[in-house]
Each structure stands twice: as C-alpha cells, then as structure tokens.
Amino acid sequence: MGLPSLLTDSRAIAAVAAAVLLSVVLATRTTRTSSHGALPLPPGPKPLPLIGNLLDMPKQRPWVGFAEMAQTYGPVISLSVLGKRIIVLNSVETLVEGLGKRELAGRPHLVVAGELMDFNRTMVLVPDGPEHKAHRRLSHIALNPSAVQAFTKIQTESIRRCIDRLATTPDYDKEIRVAVARSIVEMVYGIKIEGIDDPFVVCADTVFEALGDALVPGRYLADVIPMLKLIPSWFPGAHFKREAAQVRKELDTMCDYPFGLVKEAMASGTAPYSFVSSLLDGVKSGSIEGVPEEFISNVAGTLYGGGVDTTYSTILTFLLAVSINPRVQAKAQEEIDRVIGKERLPVFEDRVLLPYVRAVVQEAMRFYPTAPVGVARLATKDTVIGGYFVPKDSVVIPNAWAVSRDPGSSGLPADEFHPERFLNAGPPPDPSVYAFGVGRRSCVGQTVGENFVFIMIASLLASYTILPAQDEEGRDIKPKLAWLDTTLTRPEPFGCRFVPRA
Image (cartoon, rainbow, N blue to C red):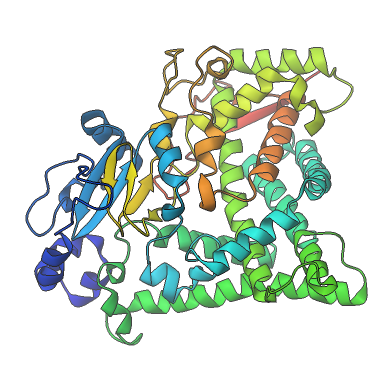
C-alpha cells in the first residue's frame, strides 16, 4: 500500500496501529470507577489487543450492525477502537436519558470536517459552549410561534406549486426537492428560487454532501492521527487537505452570499420577512445584544442543509411505501374526503382533524429514519446511562434506526408500513423524539419541518392516487424497499405514477 492510499483509506487504520502503539495503550486504560462508584462499562464484544474492537465495527450500514449487537448485549453497548471509547444507544429510553444530559452536549473533535473544512462554525459541529448557546438562542428567537405561522404560508404555497406539476412531470423527485428547497430558502432568506440549479442551492448541496461524507467513521485517517493535518497540501497523498480547502471556500460562499443579499435588500427597504431579516432587525433595534453577524450567517446556512435532505427523504419514503400499500392510501384518502371534502386541499390547521393522516406521517418518519445514526455526541465528563458508567471523552452514538424497530405492544412487523401502530394502545416510540434529536443538540427547525411534511403528505393524498411505475406493456414495476448506505439516507431511485383523483 502506497502513502497516498494510506493517508485516506479507512482500511489502513489497522496497519498504522503499531505507529500509535504508545498512545493506544495509554488511552485504552479507561478507569471504570469515578464519582458514580464502581459501575461497570456497558457490555460489548471482547476487544483485541491494541486495536480493540476495530474489526467489530460494521463496515456497511452501521445502524444495522449496532442493532444486531444490541440483540446480544442490550440497548447500551460499548466498544473501544484504537483507544477511543464508543458507546452506542439502541433504545428510546437510553437515547432520551443520555442525550438529555448536559454533559452530552459536546461533539467529538473532527480534524477534517471541523477544523479543515470549518464546519465547527455551523450548528452541526460547533463545540458546546457560548457560541453554541448563542446559535440556539438566535434560532429560538427567529422561530417563534408567529414566525412559524408566517413560514407555514410560504411552505403551503411551495407545496401547491409542486402538486400542480406532479401529474405531468417525468421527474417527480426533482419537483419535490425543488419544493423543499424553495420553501426553506424563502423562509431563511426571503429569497425566491425557481429550481435546484439555482447557484445557492447547488453550492449548499455540494457543501452538505461533503459534510455527510466527512462524517462517515474512518473516512479520513487524519481524524485518527491528528498530526496528519500538518502535512503540506502539495504532499503526495494529502489530497484530503485540498478537498477540505475547497469545501471551506464553498461553505464561506453558502453562508455569506445569501446573507449579504438580505443585508442589501434591508438597506434598500425591499427585504421581505425572513429568519435572517428578523434577527438583523433585532440586532439593529438592540433587542438582541452581544451577537456578531457571522453567528446569524452561520445559523442560517445550517438551517438549509439541516432541513432539505431530511424533509426530502421523508417524502420519498412516504411515496415508496404508499405506492405498494393501496390499503393505507385508500384509508387516508377516505378520511380526508370525509373530513375536508374535495373542494380544497388540506392545510396545516386540518392536522388535528386527521388522526389517520397524522399516523401516516409518523409511520413515514419511522419506516426508515433519514439519519439512521445521529451525529455523535461527546461526553464532557463522566456520566451514567442505563445504569452503566460512561467515561469522560467517550463518543456516544444514538442509533435511531434501532429505536425505529421497536414494534410497541402492537406486534406489527417493523419492516412493514402500518400507520395503525400509532393509533393502537401501546404505540412504538414517537419518531419525532429520535428523528430530531434530544436535548441541547436537538433540531431547532423541528416544528417547521414537521409542518412541511404534514402539509405535503396530506396534499399528495388528497390530489393523487400514487401507484408504481409501469413497463412498456403496462405492467406495474414493484419498487424495492432499499435505502442508500449514506449518513443521511433516502430510498434508492424508484419510479411511481401520480394519477389525479376525480
């Protein structure tokens, strides 16, 4: 193996273990006692000398591999990889307990994504501390109930445009992504876009695709051996530094360009109400103090990336599931027709009147979580989860996919689409708990995200019968229930038809 591949290939980690032998041996001597007493570490596979559980780490779809481990060791499992303690939470109880703790608001230090690409400036990876607190405070100010109500109107208009085009467009997935992107860009910046080829959208999609890639465990050896960041960019095998530098420039553009447009519009008196304009107004009036403008710029950029892919994936999962479940589709449509009628499309205010449609939305979120494993947390001090000792500096991974497999008391199979599971006694865990995170790192845009998903799914059900695509002889092509093996996943490409309802 040559030096270039050694610097970037995650499979080379085992080969360089000897080079970091001393640090590994020292790091693996984890104390099992603390102020919490002699509590044990969580159970897990037996580690090997030096490399620990490196060979036990799932190579593909880690959420599935971790869930399988939980069948043997219980909901809280512990692994040690090259001296780093990893704790995986596989039940809603341990996830809520653990992620709700103040000492689990930190993020692991990522050399490439955090430092070199500069994602430490965003809400995704900003270290726990004053800046992270300021980011969340700004979000809560700008996403107040009256703002959310105003944003719901923007979402509804974008969804209506999408609904009108789905019957005739061959690229339904593109139309849905445009609807999601259009609504978020207008909410955050007050800027109207027409398509996913808009320069800002292209830039933002590139940036967050790079972030998702960088968050894959073992993607960059520099995250295991931080001193590699000192290698000059021109050095053979150091293309990770050149990649990071390019992403950093694009991240600057993503955060700064639309922010600058809002400031220009405000100066000329033409800026519509938006997340950014409302915060800048607050800074100008003095109601928001001690916040540099770059914080607003960074938070705004994060909202786009954190909202588009997750919302888009949930809608695609819904379409995939109902296209092969006509019973579910017919039952939801009957409820809409009976409660609302056929003279208008559903609006957000109808949500309380449509319990089965709400259950369909919950099931779409549960069926295959968009983020099967959430972004890891860092234990900033010793703590306890599920009765087990979790040492300081442990990396804690929430396995949302494992939680989504909990059938509740209904016993309905987890890999089948049954909205009824949320209407029966003893329902499974509410996906809004584990899909949006818990505690000080939970998604600040949860309410606007849930609103969009409900309005879109209810509107699709009211407007169309969603069927599988057909071959040249008119036979249905049953789509596969398959999802991409990516940090933020979505269904593999599939075809479907939108037949207007009478």
